[in-house]
Amino acid sequence: MGALRAIIAGKRLESAGETFTSRNPANVTDIVGTYGNASIEDCREACRAARAAQGKWASMPAPVRAEILANFGKLIEKNKESLSRCLSREMGKPLREARGDVQEAIDTCHFFVSEGRRLYGQTIPSEMPDKECFTYRRPIGTFACITAGNFPFAVPSWYFIPALLCGNACVWKPSEDTPRLSEIFTELIHAAGVPEGVFNVVFGEGPKTGAALVALVDEGLIDKVGFTGSTAVGRGIGEICGRNLQVPCLELGGKNPLVVTPSADLDLAAHGITWSAFGTAGQRCTSLGNLIVHTSVKEALLGKVLAQVNALRIGDPFNEKNDYGPLISEKFAAGHARNVETLVKKHHILLTKQNGRVTESNKAALGARFDGDAKNGVYAFPTLVDGVTEADEIYATETFGPLVNVLTYSTFEDALRIANGTGYGLSSAIYTQDILEAYRFRTGIGAGMTSINNSTSGAEAHLPFGGNGKSGNGSRQSGIWVIDAFTKWQAVNWDMSGKLQLAQMDTGYVAPRDYTVVDKA
Image (cartoon, rainbow, N blue to C red; front, side, top):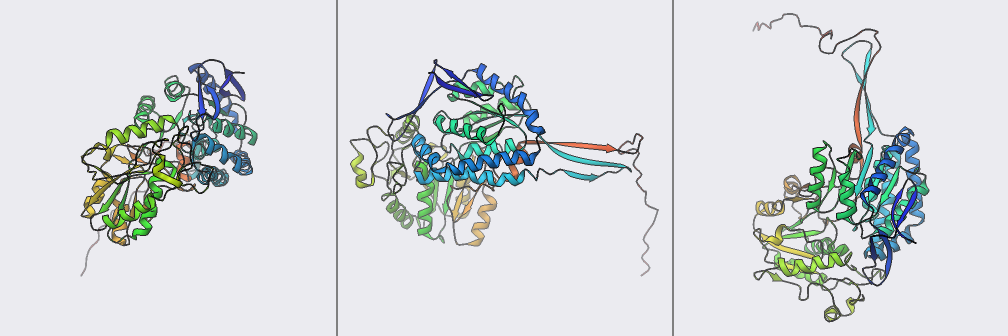
């Protein structure tokens, strides 16, 4: 039996050729599944299947499409625990967080069910008699999407639920780190009632299958691209879409700042910092990158943060007492180790005693707080780097792992400059009890999302999610705003007069009478 490489028009395509393996990062000897790399011919077939099915899907009334997506949400809800366990096993997220990942998809379904009855256009008065104007939302067409493995259920739901609701057909290249969960996602979509061909999947590695899929924009087979991943890859996708006059949905990296002011509740801030930095082992695109602390509270704050960091429990993602599990894969573990080795310089101060990868020889540093398999798992220590300045490479480099910088500031203007200076603009946060500071921060920060007295991480299904600058092109996921990404406006002029009426020329505007005001005072 060959490895699954694609699901196109409901048919499973298997291959005995080039494959890749999904492994449990808590124990890499545990193979979750083996999958094939879909070729450009497979991607082309998937796009053609989507284009062939899209018209009939779009002709289905939007409330009926919405009810099919409601079925999808019910199926996810019914299988929430088994899905969560599959998610924890395949990418290493602690079970509590995995349940949140799956719940986000359920929440997204709940939200968009009612949007199927609210794909509103407008009736607009005409400047001509016996004529009316209308606007309608129309689907974009074929939507191709490439997603990351850190939120393997939530993020695809952000893209595909509104895309399908709006009448588009989809081709998905999921992360090579979570193919099994993506396969289940697809099975549930079809079980919910989405017709064959409307939703298609091509499995494979990014530089191979992902690149092949995006190349089909030039062939006119794709009308919209969505991508969650690195800024470098996002730039390349943006160039391809740009020359085809398309606007992609790009949700890219971050170097998310968190500012702590003199008036902050330091205990509250310490909790927010620890979660922002080390939740999901620092592998959220919204994870804390730069901790920016006022000099007057630095010592007190770092004491509290280190106390919490030194109490973190790391290990088996199925142990619900653990704070974070392994990194997503060997690739990410190697990247984290490289960042610690190359970005941390001699003038920096490592506040954490043990850093880098957890191994059999150094796991004793964690003591009873570690219950993972150091030999076969891809675990990492939490790392805090003090003494970082804006001149350092680490300041503006997304590290995507449990690695956080500490910078200091003296004036609010300094804090805002440091927060905005990386070029990224995804998430941000400030801890303050000064209302004016909170107001000035939310106004002056360049990030697409900000929190006041809360962490940099955390999204709700009805709020817009996305970034600016190097973090994205201004597109947003979630909430009513994403409808704009998956529809195009059509303006309709309906003239019932029985004669040709020319706008701006045959309009019966009334000229004013000549009148001059005379002041008799």
